[in-house]
Amino acid sequence: MTNEKTTLNPNGQIVYVLTDADGKITELCNFRRTPEHVESTDNYIYVDGQIYNINDAPEPAPPTPEQIQARLTDAVQHHLDAKAKERNYDGILSACSYAASTNPQFVAEAQACVTWRDAVWAACYRLLAEVIADVRPIPSAEELIALLPTMEWPHD
Image 1 (cartoon, one colour):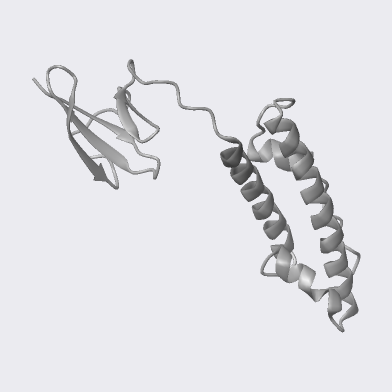
Image 2: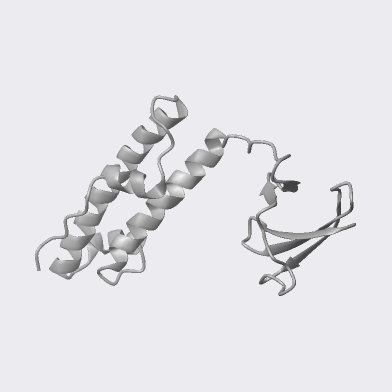
């Protein structure tokens, strides 16, 4: 007897899992969508690069300090860039580069971005140090952004 199940891999692709009567995985195939003959992804889970029966899966390893830092700083960089794009800059770096512009509005916006960016990164690294020291739990991206200084654009 064989069993057919699916699960998601870390890339969000459906993985078709064929097991033998003892529950050992005999075949894996990646699909962009669930094959019509497969009913459920409920019995298998993808953990640390391996597929396990849901009942046999080990707990995922806790993230390393490097993984925590990468996740949090990526979220902050995305937030900074998104805010700058609200004023049609390519990102925060582009916005800050207008500090030497001859246009007074661009200079004011650039200075506001430089000031805000510095405050955001200082706060981010303070929070990150607390997380790494186990003083604070790892925040979600949304929780982290809520803890950061807010941007105040200069008036037009």
